[in-house]
Image: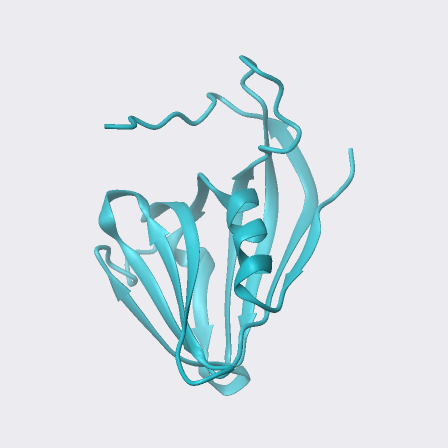
Length: 143
C-alpha cells in the first residue's frame, strides 16, 4: 500500500487534492491556523477513494494537509473552539483574486466552511502511514 503525497500549486492541482480528501473526517481540535508561520494545517482520516473497490467498504488513512502563505482564516457553520467537534470535508475550492492571491475554501458537510485568504496557492497532502478498514463507504444523496 503506497502512501499518497501531493502538492497543489494551482487550482487544477487543488482539484486533484480535493478528490482525494472528499469525505475526510476531521476533529476540530486537529485543525488550526498558525499566524506566525502563515500556515493552516489539519489532520484527517481520509477515505481512500483511489484504492476503493466497487461495493467494498474501503480503507481510511491518516493524512495531513497544510496550506502555506495564509494571511487569515475564517470559520462558519461550526464552532472552531469545540475540541470534541467533528466535521466532514466535502471539497476544497480556490477562488483567484489578484494573482497569485485568492481564497481557499474548505467546504464541509452541513454547510460549514473554512475560508483561507492566501498570498499564493500552495497545499501539501501526505498520508501518515496508518490505514484501517472503513466502517462504511461514504454515500451522498444526489437530490
